[in-house]
Length: 197
Image (cartoon, rainbow, N blue to C red; front, side):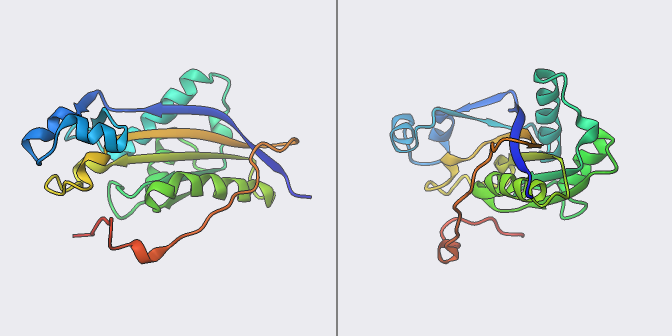
């Protein structure tokens, strides 16, 4: 019989530097109101030059633990980090988080699926628990897109900022995470992308 899964704890972190829409006026031909009416965004956060995606991910977990002091982080048996802005190609971001938390028994994997990455991380956690191979999965979504964004590209640079969120997904008797519907249309890959060089 497959186990059910539910989210039992949530944490988040954003860097302190606030970037309002007015910041873009000197960089691209745009106005604050134009950005807000098309995106709903008033501000975003940028990481400091010496602050990387793994730093944000760890701070989101620290925030989770502060909000849910009874969370048994040492019993996490798998870590998923969703990011397209990893600190480096290897080791993966999830293993950096694992090392910081000192839970060497936990497996670790990164998911690089951009906007859908965190959702896919939840789907993966749900599947690991449903299969019966894992009981407690830490899922983190973290990005430092400010370090990679082309600020001459008016169509996309206004959209991105930096931050991280973390959740614990645990086995449970009652259903908490229900069936997901997902799909991909790879034909639009040329419209918004992050190159490796």
